[in-house]
Image (cartoon, rainbow, N blue to C red; front, side):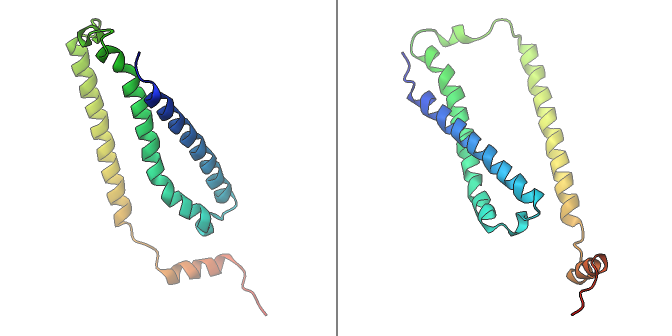
Length: 142
């Protein structure tokens, strides 16, 4: 019988962090709807520290998946050679790998093009931004 502690705890870490991030996202949407997102110091501080937790959640899911399937083969219940599917040909595997590589290559190219396009875009000068805001709002007189 395989040791299920890894599956037990990685499932809980993944599920609890997933729920936490769903609620955190709702909180962010609430701030954005109220147009308070840029000034919400607590939310922005927590969002910065939430990034490493995403990697922990991802790793917990990976541990759950990988350790959940392999121990049955390793622990003598089944040989690794018996775990290979006979219905999938080498040609199908090569075609699927080529398609995956093509999709990822396409996404990388799109990502680089978009990042370069937005990085080269000129920023509006602060004076121009203030002047355009002044034109949109009526002047206050005291």
